[in-house]
Amino acid sequence: MMNLPAIENDETLYSLCATAHSMSASSSSQRSSLSLIGTLHGTLQHDLPASIQWLVECRLAEKDTASKVARRHSIAAYYFPFVSPSRLPLISDLWLAGKTTHARRLIQSSSRTLPVAHPLKWCGACIEEDLRKLGRSYWHVAHQFPTTWRCSRHDFSLAYIEGRHKRWLLPRSCLLQRSATVPSGNAAMASILSTVGETASKLESVQITSIRQATLNRLQAMGVIHSTRRVHHDRVLAWFRSNPLSTFLRQAPAGLARFSEGEWIAPMLWRQKRSNAVRWVLLWSALDWSTSAEAGAFFCDAASALPIVRAGQIELFEEALPTPNTPFKVSSVLESASSYEEAMRILQVPRNQIARWLEADPEMRARWRQRLQKERVEGALQRLIGSVLRDPSISSAASLSSADLRLLKSHAPQEYEAITSRLASFRPRQGTLPFIN
Image 1 (spheres, rainbow, N blue to C red):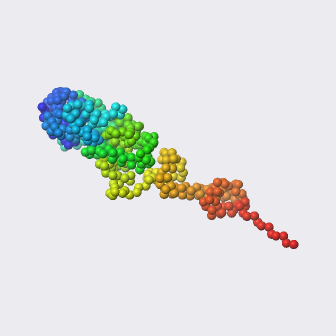
Image 2 (cartoon, one colour):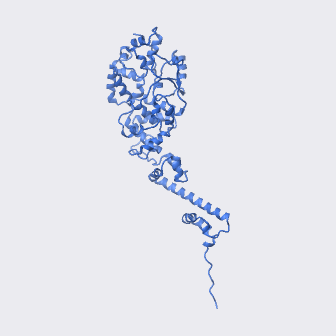
Image 3 (cartoon, rainbow, N blue to C red):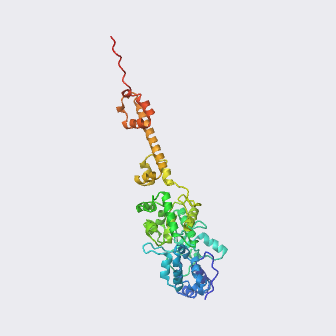
């Protein structure tokens, strides 16, 4: 049995074995793998170890805590919070027994249609820092999460190397290998994804029912949906495909591009009973957060079943304060748009959706109608005055817009009288004097 070095708090088990191999005199990765974890192909297991029994044999953990160690020092830290607590004992037993396929499927809630790869990833600034402090580089757990492509510590894009390899690799040695940096994209979105994924990994368990309801409330507050129970899925798809996250995913490697169209969202919110860590992190990151810290903080509250109202505040009392029915984005557009057509163009929604928002908020509807009417009256008045100024000889209403005159007569009678008093056709006929013999 080879001697294992001390493992860092955020180091992967694969990194520990790769470090032990580099410190040994062995030139064979297979012999080192057999000595360390009891299998010839441990170098291929850089994401999840096929078995965790070797943790017990190496005295890294007791039998009942081996799964906890593996969870803390592998990408299981990302997936386990989303696993139903009732399945954890079964996963632990399967993992100890080396039944890899079944255990991996339960941990990752993997999908055949939307598979996700887990390439080795590293941050150049972290390598320099680790070499300076420890004298060696190692694989950081958070960097290996499938939705993490930016180092939250140094705000650097991560580099990665695809595939599984027959040799033990360490970040410093990968600098000499053929590697690729993440395609340039939205750095803010990459930071949000990293923060949400790392926040989830630090939770003991994610309350799926709570986070689902919080997501629906957020979508409703954003104006994407009107009801949390019934909605046209096309609206959700249209919103997601125009979202910065979808743009980022189209350029992302490791299978994430398959998520860019958003067909998986509706089943997550209304039909699907199973939970999938990757999809929840992606969906939560798309909810128009202003900063990554805000996204992580609200995810932590929602995942912990803290009641969050649509305004984003935690309820302190049994009865929540009333919140406006019209989303802020919609109300701000309705405060400035001069017509339904302009509001429809800005919000990218049909007319009936705007009508539903206005019906749900009588005060907003009254302000909207009053402002539109005022703008119509002002426009009609300007057109009529312009016509009279261009041709002072106008004496008949036939030369003016009858629609504008009717509008002024109904909603601005004083202005109507001021204009029509200049027209001969509107002046009362001069009476005739009685004939006197």
